[in-house]
Image: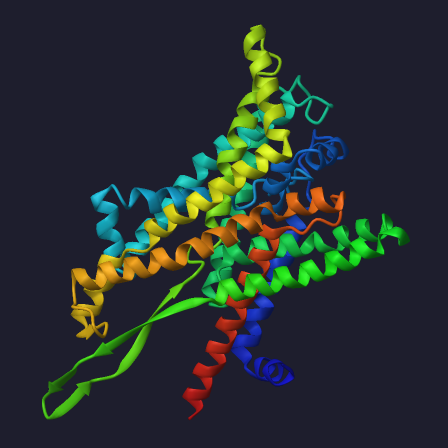
Length: 425
């Protein structure tokens, strides 16, 4: 550990990259503490604390939604735009061709994603402002004028664009994904407040619960690391080929198939789907039509039921894991690439049989990854119901993001250190 830190410190460009990323994170956290005028932040915190679903949304905004800062939307609209274009690439031939063009095609898709982020941020900001106005409790004045409403929407949208820009600047340093690091920083920033609340509410009679919490937290982190790093290695053999007077190829490698190939995206999908009915119902709680107002109140009450919410959330995450894996991983393309490079899986014929073999392998390991993600997602609900306290609940989604991003950063730093060692040789 100390040796690695010394190597990082001695490598000037790597040291500068890490310093630059830390500076960008400081800017992000500074922006997260600049509130938008006209919002009662105390009432807003109470409202978020009483709403499990909005609490999850607040987590992905890095806590900026709870203070209704200029970056309250976080990178949510950008993530949504990215997911939309990944799905469109399956049905729009032009986008599919761009994906196959390599770096140039990916840059075009990234540009489209940035442009789509702006209307999505405006739409999402309007929805959040309307939801908070309908929620009552004086969070946002119901007499908000059109000028103030438009100004709030533009401010929140500009905050999202600012974070998108910061994320891309961080990604250029090649020490992890910039958007993931911003979410990671937001979650870590809430850790001192969570620990403070836990210490304030500490009771000596709850020592057993604290011990159980500590053991479960350690096991959860170990499980996250195990599943995140878990993979099935499919052996690939490359045939020997003659190039002039030299024989090349004949090497053996493997194709890594990760257990959790979808990452945390299925959880984001599920949160978006679960959030929509409550947000729509909240808009009609004061409707003049009696049956519509009653239906809205029943919908809100149904989603506030922990059992119903937990089961629905579990099922959605489990299903979206299969769906998103099918979107991002194409066995037929992998098989074609292996065949073009002169490789084959021992005992399996190249081409379609290889694609079918890879698909069968994915189908065997995917249930474990889907069940793991779904369990991680509902872990806070299980903890709250079993321990009877919200303070000691383990944020499974938060842990998954933090551990995954930390592993990615460590791997990126180690790869850069290794590359520089080879350059010195």
